Image (tube, rainbow, N blue to C red; front, side):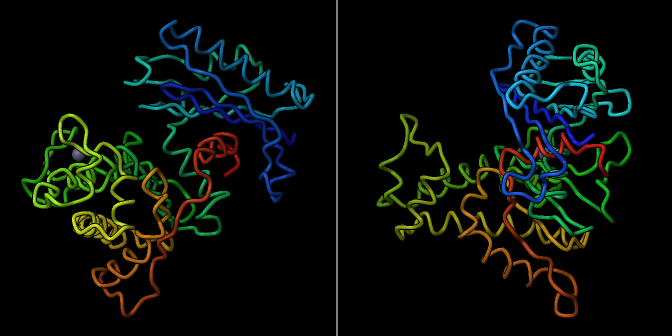
Length: 323
Ligand SMILES: [Zn+2]
């Protein structure tokens, strides 16, 4: 059977794709139909499952494929999952605890359903069809509100005890540094996520009363979005220059640690901040080269931009049983 369903259950939206395995080499990478809608989580668990099933059938109907022609559906959910049992153990976004998501959806679709964590599946998508395709040792890092990621060692996603490995955002890069949501201080994500960059910005602009960034602050005197900082940087604003320099310094420390720990062939950056890879990548590549152990003696890890954007998780879900 050549068809697979890929589902991304998000806190605000549900997205579904139908994938044709015979078309993976084509421009659309096998996606032959899509459906999406808001997540009705305020109506409870059963309503969410019913809506996911409805969107799956909507997808199938668009291209006249019967559910019996689909080998399985893969679903990515935010939070802690028991992959073996298909249980969503806990999701703070969806307010679900211990729900048998795979089994419930399988009853409605009448095909096997497999569940995994959404960040793992996004990393898997980039590994199979995106920026890290062809690399057995790769790290995918999402620079979003926080920092998430997936580490592939010899072609396999590193899961660790409790499936808890790969919390890349929560290694400390500064003792007694910024407080983190995890309870520690100085975690990488407190500096190198979008939230971290904004905090750095709002600390530094106080030293630059003439900065153009002051035209964009809110009622509390704060810059609220990262593109504003990069736009000021593009225009040669001195405050923005220092903000980005400090940001790059912290991002580089974390990435060099990751290179030393896992020695990946490729590190692919995704998430909102990767939209400014034109600024980040050249600086990171040269900065990391100076910090990595034995860098002169070894071929360098390539730092690249992820390719699949929001579709990465959908590809990972649809292909979750293919590796
Ligand atoms: Zn932390």
